Length: 69
Ligand SMILES: [Zn+2]
Ligand SMILES: [Zn+2]
Image (cartoon, rainbow, N blue to C red; front, side, top):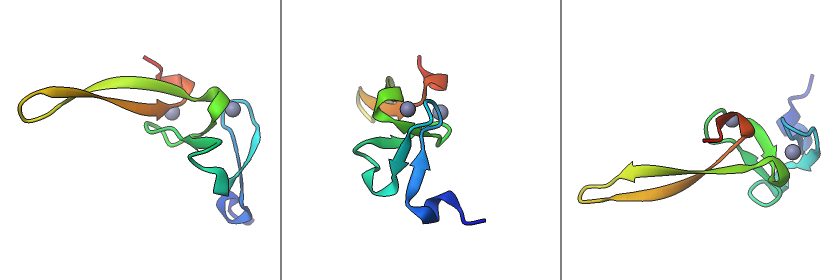
């Protein structure tokens, strides 16, 4: 068995769409919580509050539908 990542193709864990490894960040990305592969159509954005030294700021993370707030 050849690992999926070696064949240059990955599959969206949600809709099953076949995606190319080289398109990461463009057509798909990894869920920042569980690292599942998600295409742009199945991608969600969570805004999370992060504490800085003197104030707080908001950061946006890409997640799959399992972690949508
Ligand atoms: Zn998808
Ligand atoms: Zn996830």
